[in-house]
Structures are given as structure tokens and as C-alpha cells.
Image 1: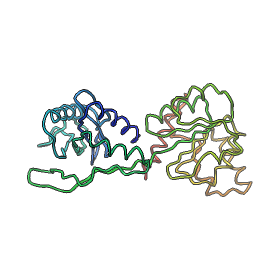
Image 2 (image 1 turned 180 degrees about the horizontal axis):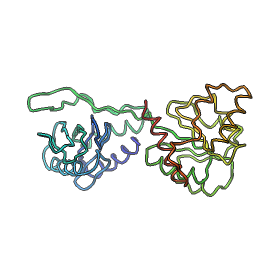
Image 3 (image 1 turned 90 degrees about the vertical axis):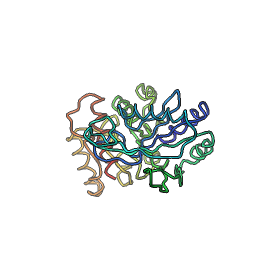
Image 4 (image 1 turned 120 degrees about the vertical axis):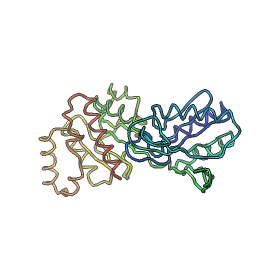
Length: 302
């Protein structure tokens, strides 16, 4: 997550006093580095990524040569992932391209980092820094990103699939919250990936999950009865995503009963069930990957 990056950046800058920050500012096609990827380089350490591979290795080595020189003004480098390109070859062959901006950071940047960490809603900005886009051209340019939009996964149910899904989503920068009604559940206790874990009464589940365009609700409770309790309390809420684990037969029965009890078809249609992409998954981790893939699909549509 963005704040994790800047917490680590603060520690590294205090240790090293000077760093090179590389930021991917644009990308096209099958580029391994996507807009917003960033990396800090010191003489002895690295943090983050701009896409990996031989391209990243070369640019890290180049950044370290900059640290042996006087302070530099920000500039950009284009990287074309095609060995037939006349110039700006990255050394990779995945056919896309990306633009990487280089910033010289010293201890004065600690104040900016402190501001970022103090305000979760802050816009991270390196404002009005002149970037040399070529030998003869100069432009006003700045990099800006938001700390505010972090996808939040509320997983209802703390069993084996929940644990596997938490592990996968932690690699995708989701903020994970686990809710279950069972005390002393070993798989929930073993879940080191969640930010919060709570034992709650499913009759009041709606009090524990906020509505929002960054909220993803994944229902994988112990069985039909608890799923029915949960879905009835969440169905009319506004989330980015709501999905439910279970067979087609169970889902059809549950939805039929909801419809008979007066719930709107439009609200029922919002529920992804059975949950996940159809990859014939069987094990807990296979199910977790199918669900995570569906969340990515929904997230990246907007």
C-alpha cells in the first residue's frame, strides 16, 4: 500500500540521507511497469519496483551512478520493450513501453513524507518540478497520487478458504477484515494477513461493514442458514462488490426465497454467486485465486 511505501521510505532516507526515486508516469501495451509503480534506490538498498527484469536492473544501476554525482533536476527516460526499437530499448521483449521519472531526494523530503503519513487523504505530489523531456525542451510537470483509495475486503467467515483468500489478497494490496460468529476459530486465529478480526453476531453484520465504492464484501460463512442471515442484512447496501460462496443449487434456493420475501430482483442481481471466476477450482487456494481474480476484474473495470 502507498502508506507502507512511504513509511519504509522515511526509514531508508534517514539511514542513507540521499535517494533516487523512480516513478512510472505512463505505460502502454504489455509493459511490466504500470503507471504509479515506484522504486527508491540508495547505494546499498532498494524499495519497490518499476516492473522488474533486465530493465529494472539497468535503471537501478544507473540510479546509483547518479548518487555519485551532484544533485540533479528531475528528468524522464522512455523505455521501449522491443529490441527492434531504434532507441530507448529496455532490454525486454514484451512489446509495450513505459516512461520513468527520476527524482533526487535528500533529507528535506522527510517533511513531505511526514505530511503524507499524517494525512491519509493527502495527495502525494512532487509539484512543479521542471523535467527535461529532451535536450531542447523544458516543461512544468508533477507526479501526484492519492492515498485515499485502498480496496477493502470484508470477508465474512474465517475458515480455510477465508485464510487462503486473505493470503492472496494481501499480495494485491487489499486491506483485509475478517468477521465470524465462532469463538476461538483456529483458522481465524492463524490469519496473519488481516488488519482486523472480529467475532460478531451475524444478526447485526450490517453494523460492521461500511458502504462504499472501495468496499468488497465476500460471504463465505459456515453454511446456508448463516449465509441467509448475512445476505438479508447486506443486500440493499451499496458496495463495489458483494459475492457469496456456495453451489449453484444453494444460491438458487436462497435467491428464490429472497424474491418470495419481497427483496427486489435488481438487488439480488448485484450478488456474484457462485463467487469467483469459473476455473473449476477445488482446493481452498484454487477457490481463493478464482475469487481474487474476480475482484481484480471488477476493480480494474473502473
